[in-house]
Structures are given as structure tokens and as C-alpha cells.
Image 1 (tube, rainbow, N blue to C red):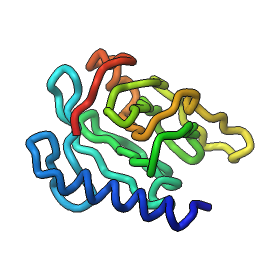
Image 2 (cartoon, rainbow, N blue to C red; image 1 turned 135 degrees about the vertical axis):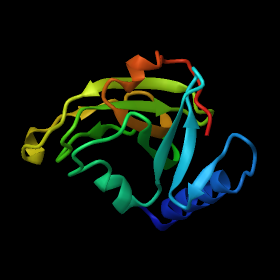
Image 3 (spheres, rainbow, N blue to C red; image 1 turned 90 degrees about the vertical axis):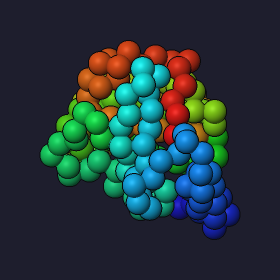
Length: 152
């Protein structure tokens, strides 16, 4: 369970990112924003800030359009391994540092509909603050690589 301070820091970061007002931050509503990839393509992502939303993530969903995704905003820099428990589709998982630079990737991460004891974890070996989940194959389609910077 996260501490009260961590939850407050996460909420403050979300407000900061939503309220920047510059051209790099585009919000459709309180829960989505545009993420621009290095090749100029834009994906609309659901923003996950609360511990409950982060834990649920892409669980139980049957599809994810290639121009959609999910952005997890952690309260600070840390090692955040992800797993695919109850996820039904392959995902590209992209970890970014505070400057939004890709530091680690897991492409076409396989779903794990089986019991949680059988699901392995991916990534989280390099400190990150943001994690982006895209449909499997989207990272390769847009030539995403470690060291590139995303805009949001």
C-alpha cells in the first residue's frame, strides 16, 4: 500500500502535467492526453494516477487500437516492474525517466490470463517515472528505441 505522501505527490504531479497549458500537453478530458512519438505520430492515452487504476491497467480488455494507449504516472523515480495478469492482448511497455526519455522497453509482451502465480514481471530494471502501454507491435511500427524522447 502506498503512503499518504506518495498518493499526494502522485496527485500533485498529475495536476502539474494537466495544467501546464503548453502545446506539448493536450487533454481531451480529465483522464486522457495526447502523447507524441518521436516520428510525429500521436496516440491518445488514458492517464493512470491512482493506485487502483494503476493496478487494474489493461486487465480484462479485449483490444487496444493502434492510436490508443495507457500512461502510468508514478509519484517519483523508481523501479516499476509490470506484469500482464488478466491482460488479454500483447502490449508494448515503455518505461521513461522524468525527462520522458525511453529507458527500457518490453515489446509484444505476452498476455497472462492464467493465475497470478504463473505471470512473470517485465522491466523495472532501470529507474523510471512514466510507463506507456501501447498495443503490441506499435513500438516497432514507429521505430521506438531506448534514448528517444516522447512528448506529453
